[in-house]
Image (tube, rainbow, N blue to C red; front, top):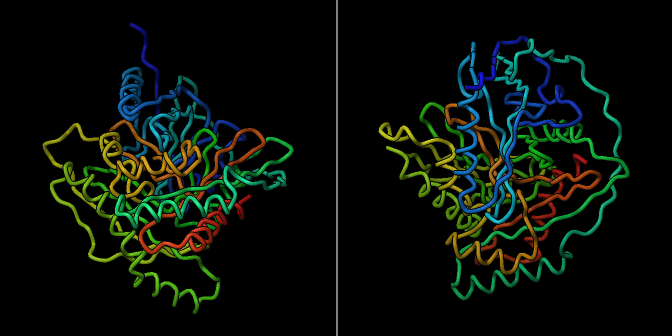
Length: 405
């Protein structure tokens, strides 16, 4: 029988911002407001496709865990070995899961390090790196603005014929640079500009998502639903008035209700109780405001097999990134969107050895390939949507990644 691989978790005293610890390559992150996890080096990874991609990754993760001898002096979610994963939106595209060799975590005043192997505890470099300047050239994405407006009009026509209630359509833009892209300064800029978002990096997919698809910890599950958006102007008084109009907008409230309902219905079979607030709150980000609702639940005590993978399988894709009814909306996206989403709008985040984890929806994001990054933005189309207004909303959502670049 082969010997088990040591996995060790110790407390550390470093309070350096997590994202500044990342090396130039093979880096992973899930950080919000200074707390979260970063990792580097690749111990093992898997790439999967298909309808059963969540089950494939779960099976592989459990096989890897059986080969570990875990010594955990910290305990709690995110300690011990951790899997970073980024799933595709469409089952026919590739999803990826990676076990980093080194992970550093921070939650409040507690910081820890986990490493795989017989070696001594890896050093944590406590000096911020000096990043080289990167100059990007922008070019058109898969569709022109006019072509995308036409696709939105097609979706509205289907809604008017009662074929569907809501569908989310996305578009992309491409930026290139002469040298290979260093994602670290981009991640740091996103974290500085959007501290209320989860800043992520998994195998070239980077971004700052405001939407938490799933947090599972000690039998409690939380999902933050965002749907209904209005751009910010930068004028506080004007933005306060816009926030009020967003909260009263029948079009945006309808879009939001669809998204909340889809999440609540997905979680209900796994929970002994759920809490769905009667009305959304307005989440203020640097570039836009969203209608937001936090759906929470307590897992059934009898169902010990429920883990983050089981919940993901039920939750994805939510109405916030797909539409309502979900299956019909998925087909409409396939028919008229005209773009390959890849891992954009799929679940991204981490899962630990207990099956707990935090995963968001990969929004406000970009896919890096050597010296090119392809960024994405999507809009929920419902009855009353206007193609010109939706184009403006998508442009506002692009600004998060554009300003970070």
